[in-house]
Length: 117
Image 1 (cartoon, rainbow, N blue to C red):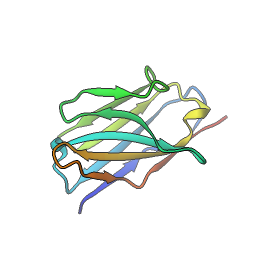
Image 2: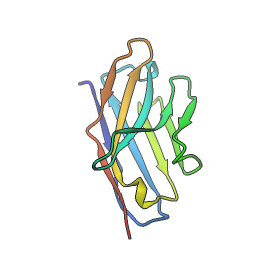
Image 3: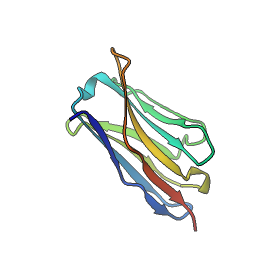
Image 4: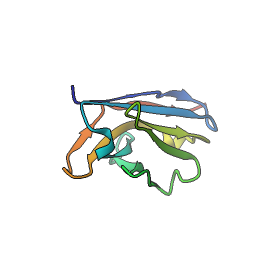
């Protein structure tokens, strides 16, 4: 079955940390750039972090120095380590696989992250 399954969201206090995971199945993981997006209520979905099939990374300015994206090709899983979380990081976080050659997009169902005291 072709799917992305996210996990790891939850409620955390400001300054805390969370690690999101996204397990891919049914795709050739190495042929996909992997992305994390987020969407807060009333806002557009925004790109948070990217890791290419070659391992290059890129981050939104708002999360640089706090978030780290990584990928495990053996487990076909991408991670988002989130440190020094702020209330404005509260959103539903979505995993995306973008085909390096096909341009095809696959989305996960999302995982909620809430940063609040």
